[in-house]
Image (cartoon, one colour):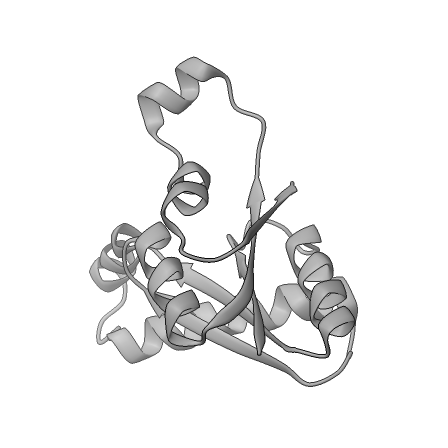
Amino acid sequence: MTVLAAIDGDRDEDPVVSTGYDLASAYDDRLVVLHVMSNEEFADRQDSTQEYFLENAEETARNVARRITRGTLGGVGDIQFRGAVGPVAETIIEFATEVDARYLVIGGRDRSPVGKALFGSKTQTLLSDAQRPVVCVQT
């Protein structure tokens, strides 16, 4: 089976990756680290860079997953890196279903109730809509 660690790419080391690695090791599962570039970020990059296509964005996102995993774990094991473009929470859920993830590991931040109401929460969407166990790591 697979443990899917979905990272946001905001830091050089990510506890989502280390928790995903620990779970994958405990169950002798494959670890897949995924970074999803939002549609908005993709559009911004297309506007600022000539000939920036979906394949470029997916490779950029895959490189983010690779860089953060190496920053967190170093050169450990057989880890797959994936990159995608789309609505972040929905794309993560689709990917978790596609790889039949045993666990989906995500990060969550402290947010006030007003902040959640005003801005929404990808974490909340993942917790409520994923059809598999979700491990939320405080980041």
